[in-house]
Image 1 (spheres, rainbow, N blue to C red):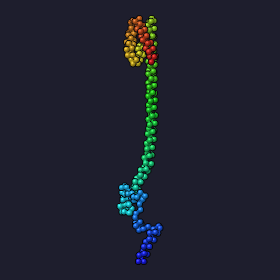
Image 2 (spheres, rainbow, N blue to C red):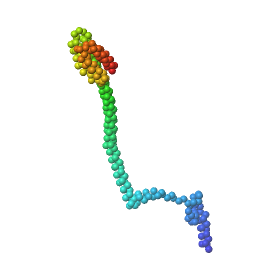
Image 3 (cartoon, one colour):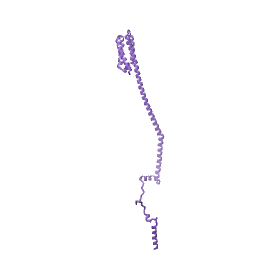
Image 4 (cartoon, helix red, strand yellow):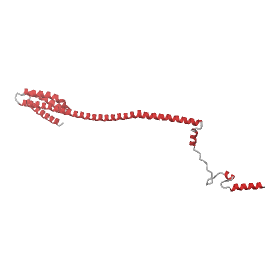
Amino acid sequence: MSEQVEDAKNQEEILETPGQESPLTAAQPEEDSSGSQTEPSRPSFLKRGLQFLFNPETRFGRAARSVTRTLALIVSFFALGFLLAYLLLYRPASLSLEDALLKAETLQGQLANAEESLQTTRQDLQQAQERLSIQQSRIQVLSVLDHAQSARLALSARNGSATAQKSITAAIQQLEQVLPNIKAFDPNLASTLKARLDLISAEAARDPKTAVADLNILIEALQLLDQNLSQK
């Protein structure tokens, strides 16, 4: 009986002792303020996959890590090789090509300017040659005119047919030289002058008066021709 009383007292002391919990209370799980137990979040599928592939605790993971490092090293060497090739080969070649293209464009521009200047010079030379040809034609026309006037003066004098014939012959020879230039200027006029001078040569001995009249017409035509040539 006394043992039962002591056991009851011991149980009361255990219940009344502060800071201690009963076995029932200690066995119950703790709950948060909301009354629900928190569960740990599960990692994502990608993270779990990476952990599986590169897990250092498995043979496959260690092999995958080694292969990855090797591939990274190879890619790094390739990238370094491309960079060195770009810096040492491609970039200098590209700069050299750009410089060559720039020089080619500059030379092309200079060539275009030179061709334009040459074309202008050719045009100026052609114009100068045309002016020179015109001046030479004028000189020859004036020479024909001088011989025609001398023939007219000789035919107007007595016994001047021989002198007139010499002047007419000289006029014919001079006209033959300038005739191509006159044809280029006026083909009909060239034919008329040649026919008129041949007629004067035939008339000088047998009909001096008619020859003088034809010489007057010839002289007027030559003077008009010289005037037209001087305006070119």
